[in-house]
Picture 1 (tube, one colour):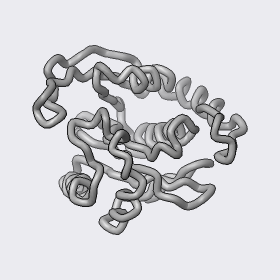
Picture 2: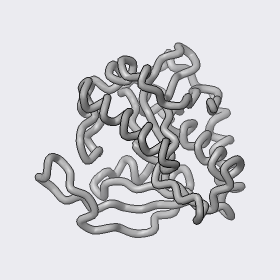
Picture 3: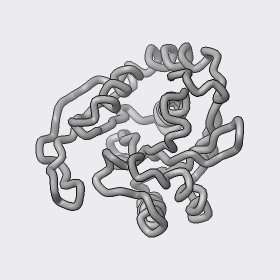
Picture 4: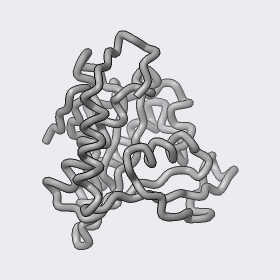
Length: 201
């Protein structure tokens, strides 16, 4: 199952993606808002193995992100926390190479996953969570139409135990999807060239 768009293809995560993902994630700042860094060969191997384990248990659908214009692996994303009985899942575990940040890549990844979740998998709710200190992520989620629902205080231990993270939850529900889909499609048809680095998604 490959989810294809204008700028990116989301392909099922495999162990064979390890080297390319290590290269895409070699800048440790990419994982600033992760509970623990994924940079480095062993952490990346564990990240992939955990995703594949949860997939085998029916709790995740992990993907590698490949850009169409140059066929490069530039990051990863997934459906996680899947609750089939309740028809809901979370989109997260997302990270991108600095080379494609502030481009349409993240927006199109969200569009492809949301469309697949609501229109193919039949989810009634898709949720997101982010660190309360990550203002950029919170703004991006609002920009795609997600509703901020509240904060789980002292939700996760991060930075090797040096800080407790408050997690802010967002969601999109099925009834909201048609309007959000139309807005995302309108954004994604705008002209964009990866050769023009100053363009911003």
